[in-house]
Image (tube, rainbow, N blue to C red; front, top):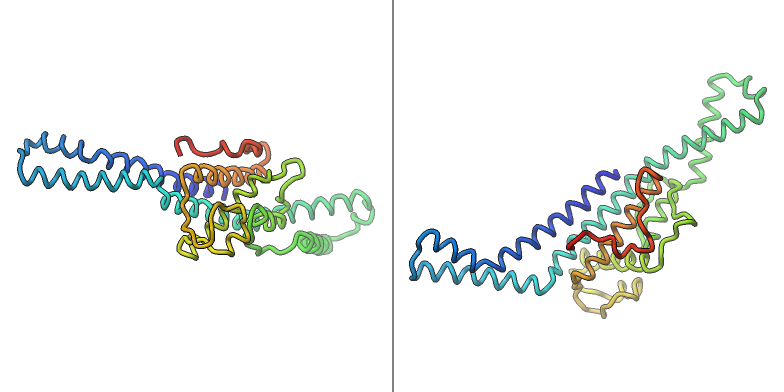
Length: 265
């Protein structure tokens, strides 16, 4: 599940990067086309002028998109990345919950055996298994539902699900307020982009008052916005994986999360 998350995040950003590089190539369309025509010895005339005119049109379209800072591509990439985070939590929690139930149940039974060794020695296999099953049920009940899905805003969208596997935020690594704000904004922008044709409404502004939009504005995610939101998603996803894997997965810097965006994003 962690590998799938990394792959999905990487794929989303790779497509965006290739599109960005492709735009730069299109910006230089006229120069490329002139070189091609010269290499093919195409003389001045209608054919050459038509080819150069078409190249100039491609270049102008590319320049306009670059000047527009790839706002649509930024948006679709971030929606994909947020979906990858949802998928990570939805897939991770049931598996981690089952593991935790088994671990805690057997630990409780071991503690009970150490406290009452004589009574434990008198239990046959069938009774021991029935007792283990009872303890599993008790632990599962304490952890809560196993079919919760991410919903809500900010980090609590995922924390409310992670708690059912004992993976909720630790007191020693609280989520910074500005990181939570960025996650909250991104969740609301995702709703606007996927359900409201990209036009901000009052529902989004009520749930994310920090958004720099007015009711009715179209979402325009600049390069700077993209770096901020992508850094938030990368950092929070890496933090979840660190909770699961401990020292086997590097702990992201929560304080410097804004720097955790892909180079040249």
